[in-house]
Amino acid sequence: MALQAEAIGLDSVWVYDHLLFRMPDMPDSGAHEGWSILAALAAITERVEVGMLVTGLRLRNPGLLAKIAATVDEVSGGRLILGVGAGWHDPELEAFGYPTDNRIGRFEEALEVLVPLIRSGAADFQGRWATARTAVMLPPARPDIPILIAARGPRMLGLTARHADMSNLAWFAGADDPILAQRTAALDAACEADGRDPATLVRTVGVYIRLPGATTPSPVRGQEGQPQVTEDPEAVLRGFADAGFAHAVVWLDPMNEDSLARLGEAAVHPGASAI
Image 1 (tube, rainbow, N blue to C red):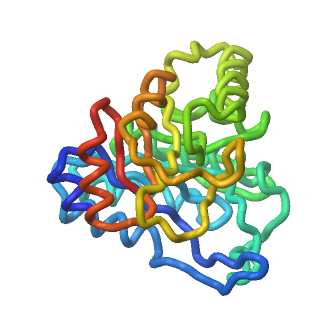
Image 2: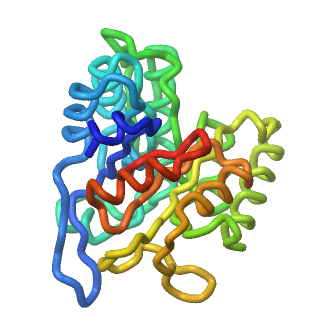
């Protein structure tokens, strides 16, 4: 799928980072470990950016994550987008023995280690949950690896404004969703409160596109319930591009080669990506 995405001209390929999905009234499910998969994709592709959407920082020691990200970026030849978030699915943390308390506090402290290690090659921080004692990155990371933060609430949006090169709002079936407009306005306000020009933050959006043959439960709810099957993905992508999003990270349903080919045909605006 990654090689097909590259061949048809898409800009990037993305992986998510979860250990286990344990939803009420549904059987457990899961995926291969995300950073291992991303390293494999970095090795076999040549042009597309490779991104993580996103690593929940409660799953990773931030210093080790900086090393992992720098390594994958090196393997890719400088094509990594480092996506991070606070995480949302506590059942997987409980199952694998990770803490579930102080979600955003832990995320904020982890950034105090992760960001300096990437940007300057050194970190020295003592917090309640994160620690780095004169840590250095050898070999150093590419200092301008884009850091993307996925955020919703006010505190997370503030951290996005302070630390991120890119933001992600997800998942949406159309650019006319009023929740998307509310979150975009809140992100602008967070940038302004931090003294940052909102235009300096690259905007990405997670887009859910259902094509004929879609059968899996939808991860998003639209204004009228579940998103409907679309015969016009071009219009969906155009709406997000016109709304000012630099990248549309697309979750396809069904996820197969035919759907990916259809997405390639629809990607008439820069920034269409395949997850």
